[in-house]
Amino acid sequence: MDIIQSILLGLIQGIAEWLPISSEGQSMLFMMEILRLSPVEAFSIAIFLHLGTTLAVILKFRAEFLEILRWRITSNPILLKIIIISTLATGITGVPLFFLIKGFSHGDIFTLLIGGMLILTGILLRTQDSKDEGYKRIEDMKIRDMLFLGLAQGFSILPGVSRSGTTITFLLLDRMRQEDTLKVSFLISVPAVLGAVTLNLVTSSGEVIPFSVTNALVMITVAFLAGYATIDLLMRSARHLNFSKFCIILGFLTIVVTVFPWIV
View 1 (cartoon, rainbow, N blue to C red):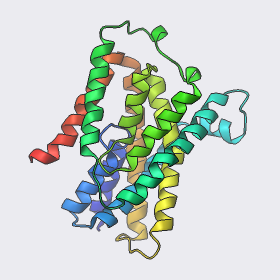
View 2: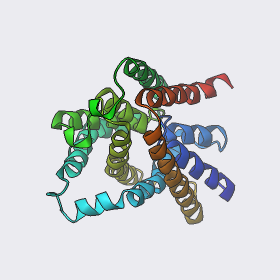
View 3: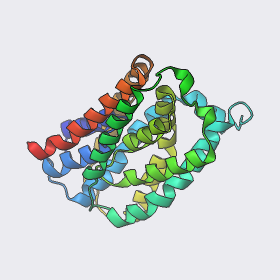
View 4: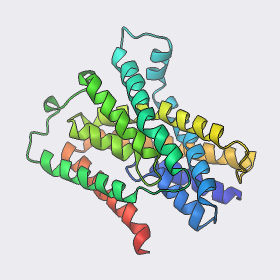
């Protein structure tokens, strides 16, 4: 793997991670078709790439994470509760799937379903009042919502299943404001990604990963920069798009990017 290829992988991860198109699936496709890596190698690198975008989330939402780390739970306990409950629930579905599909399965059909659900959600919302008063805020989330959100996120370990698409769809169907939807989706990604990276390192002992320290630093840095820029773009878009258009655009984007490799 050369530096240019490392940069391309970082860009794929950074741009695709926060869109409902499965950055893991797109990067694995690139590695297997262009770089001719094995599914096991591609899967391990795809998980590793998430470190860059995770650093972008930590920087973007550093105030929220510092608040949690300092145990200022009296000022905003809901964020800590969401992260803990959703992470535990993610492990319930994600860990067994990790061992079942490592280097094996693809979830393109499920991702297409996510795209369809986003479009359907947008169409349904066009028949309703689109003012913020009709939607939930982060503070309105119940333990049940957090649990099912985490369970849904666990399925994103499948290559081709979008983590952001899954969580965004769940929260939008639960009628959460789009700005809060993105924020929650970003925040709960951090422990999930760190857990996946750790699990992959533990279970990959002895396997040869085909990149150098330089390649690793380049991939993480590019993924971090592209990921941070994408977060800003999405957050600004969420403020200006109405709810139904937001769902429909994300849904069509999901379907187009998922179907495109099948027709070329």
